[in-house]
Amino acid sequence: MTKIIQKENRELYQCEECGFQYAEKEWAERCEALCKEHKSCNIEITAHAIPQEDESKQDVLKPEDIEFLTKLFYGLIGIVSSLTFFLVLYWVLRLDSAITNIVTNTYSTPLYFWPYVVLTLGAIALFGVNISLLVYRWRKFGPPKFKTEAGGGAGTLVGIAASACPVCGSTILSVIGIAGGLAAFPLQGLELKALSFGLMALPIWLTRRDLKKLECGDGTCPVPKDHRFKESDRPWLFALLAVVIALSLVSWNMLKTEPIIAKALSRGIVNPSDNTLYNANTSQTGNKLIDEVTAKVLPEQGFRSKIVFSDSMVKLAQNGVIDREKFLAIYQDRGGLPAELKDVLDRPSQGPLHLTRQNANYYVNLLWPLGLANYMSSNRESPINGKSLFNFASTGGWDLGKEENGGAYFNKFKIVELTLEQEALVTKIAQNAYRPCCNNSTFYQDCNHGSALLGLLQLGAAQGLTEDELYREALAFNSFWFPHNYIQTALYFKAVKNTDWDTVNPRVVVGKDFSSASGWYANVDSEIKKLGLVPQDRSGSNCGV
Image (cartoon, rainbow, N blue to C red):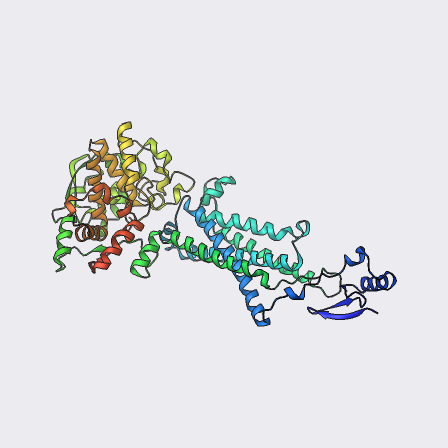
C-alpha cells in the first residue's frame, strides 16, 4: 500500500518498501510491486521518482530568514538588470547627445519632458522586473519553451530597442532605416517611449500567466522545484550585492560629469530649464581680492579684440542665416542694438570688436550663426553632423533665420573663407577649447556659445591671428560670456597657484580642466569653496537667444 505524504503544499506518493516518492500514484504502486517481487525497483521506475535532498545538506536557515533572503535575492537580480539597462541607454545617449541637452531643450515643454522621464524610468524598472521574473520561473519550473513562450522575450527585446531609440535621438533609428531620426515622428519619439513601456509590461503579464498555468493542481503540471533562497545561493547573493555597488559607482561617476548634475551638486537643486551659469555681480564687493581679479577678468573699459566682423554679418543676412526683421525684433524691448552694432547687418564693419559687460550677449547672437553656417571641410567630422543635427541647442535653438531650424544652415556657406592651414588651426584650437555651459569642446558646437566661439576663431584665423592670439581671444570672450566662472577661475589661480590673471596661459584656462563644466566644478569651484571666496551676488546668463 503506497503512503500519501504532504510536501511543499502538495500530495506525493511514497513507496513504503524503498521510500522513493512520486508525483503520480501509478508509479509509486509500480515501484512497490517491483520492490516486493525483486527486492528492488528498476531504473525506469526510479527515473520518475522525485529527487530527495540529503538531509545533512539541507538549509539550516529559519523560515523567516528564507522568506526575507528570497525577496532580497530576486530584488537584487532586478536591480542589477535595471542598472545595466540604464547604463546601456546612457551609453547610447552619449553617442550623440547628453542628459543636459535633453533637459535644457525639453523642460520648457512639460507635455513632452515629463512623459519622456516617466516612460524612460518606467521602462528601466520594468526591464528589471522582467529579468527577475524570468529567473524565478527558471528556478521553479525550468527554462521557458521558446516555441510556445517566446512572446515575453521578444517583447522585452523590442522594448529595449524602442526605449533606446528616443534616448539616443538617431543612432538606432538610422540603423533600422528611419530617415530624419525623431523628426519622422509627430511626437518626436514619445511614441517609441510609450511602445517601449508597453512592450516591457507585456512580458510580465505573459510570464505571470505562464506561472499560473504551471501551478495547476490537477497533477498534470511539472513538479515545482524549490525556488527559494538556499545556503548554496549565498555566493550568488554576495556577488549580486557587489555588482549592484559596482554598477551604482559606475553610473554615478558617469552622471556627475553631466553639467546640469554637477551644477545641482554644487549649488543645490536648480531649475532644469534654466541652462544658466551664474554671473558674479561685477560691482565692488568689498573683498579686495575679489575686486582685484574681477577688474582683470572684466576690465571696465572692456576687451578690444584684434578681430573684425568685416562683411561676415552682411553675408549671413544675405543668405538668410540671419533674418534681419526677426533679429532686430528680439531687441525692440531691450532698446535696440548698441550704437556700434546698429548697421552690422547692412554694411561691412572694419572696426575691431569691442567686448564689454553690456554688449557681450549681443556678440553671442551675432557669432552664433557664423560658427553654425560657415563652411569648413573638417565640419564633416563634427559630432553634431549626424541624424541628430536638428536637435541640438545650437541648431534647433537658432530660429532667427529664414529657415525654422538652424540645422538647415550647418556648414553650408563660405561666409569666412579659410585656407587649409587656417582651417587646420581653427579645428585644432576648437577641439581643445571648452566653455563652462557644456562638457564638450568648441568643435562639438552643441550650444550657442560653442557655435559663437567657433565663429570667432574662424574670423580670427582668416584675419591672420596666431594660435596664441586666438587662445587669448577665446579666453576673453568666454570670460565676458561666463563672468562668474572666470572670476572664480582667476581667484583660483591667484589664491592657489599664486598666478595673476594677466599672466595665466590662455590655452590652459580654456582647456578641459578649467573650462568644461565638469572640469570647472571639480578643479575650480571645489577649491574656491574651501577658501570661502565664492562671490555671493549672482544674476543669470543663459544659452538662449
